Length: 227
Ligand code: ADE
Image 1: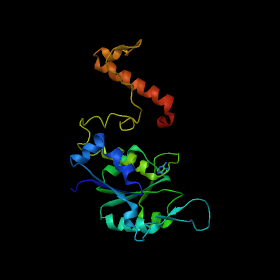
Image 2: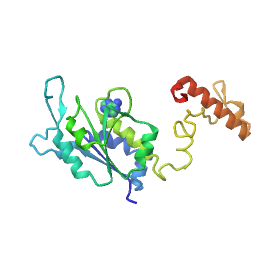
Image 3: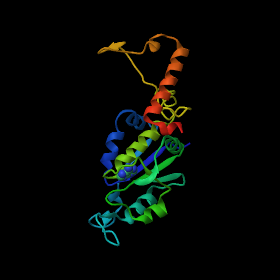
Image 4: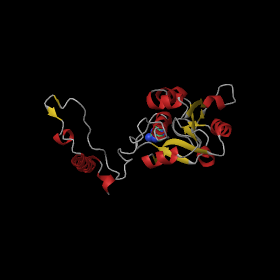
């Protein structure tokens, strides 16, 4: 199978490249487990001023991103295996199941919007799915794209050193519960002891305690997950 690859198209390629060059995702790129290319949308313009936005038809504040550079970008980058995403606060909420679905693709093209929006013909003609990372508005979609890429790339085979660590975690586990609290040394810190059960070496009791804690924590902060 072809190597998994991602093309991010944005007017701020450095905003995407910098966080993805560090840590686990940076190493995954260096070791060739994934190829991530950050493109400057302006490279796909043909006019002297490399213009990527224009005034909205019908009036209103702000600027709208022009269709032509996005069409040129997707036409240049798309293969028969590509899935094209557009980052926008109005998209489908991003989630762990979507991250898993995207990690099973071969090629993602992620388009990042900016300003007041993107000409709707881009969405209609080019985009398979619009994605939002949450109910808040960022200055542009590039930071949102890095979040999607991080969540997807860590699921690729071999990217996390420890194969079990992507399984037994919040949302990734079978039960859809939040994780139990974790502790490490020292056993007591600033008067706060580590729960005795974790020091007991009793694996069955530890598993029971973790499950109870998971349920309590989920009830307290994410009751919607229990519905
Ligand atoms: N662009 C601006 N805000 C966004 C969000 N919440 N999700 C995805 N893209 C965005």
